[in-house]
Image (spheres, rainbow, N blue to C red):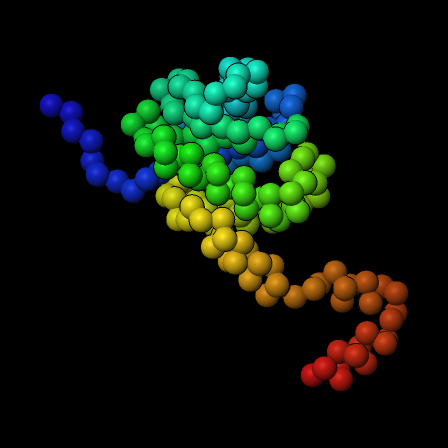
Length: 177
């Protein structure tokens, strides 16, 4: 008798492709699933070929449950095992999409996504950690991501002041301290 061990809801992979099937972001949480980059890209291309013209939201391929959504020139995918709850996977997908929609100011398209890749990775990391679903509420994700983005020092401005020799920036900083 084969009994499944109880486990947390898990995600095998998350990836975002453009409208040509090219990878923009991917995270694989199961190292045994597709260990090489070539196997990952082949899987992504198979998924893209099966889903890019379909109007469904769910697909079953290679023993995986895949939920997906498209927006303008992007395709968002969340992959789980065949036994995984489709509704949980869909809640992860919706949380990812809604969070990115807020960060990208409702402009969820390729160029904007690439310009804000740091925020995109932060969103994915807040939703899923090591394949375990941590959060499915976009507002909670946005609060955590905004906190992390705001708490990081503005190294770019310090570097710009240094390069340009701007000493005014230093006086303002010293007055603030």
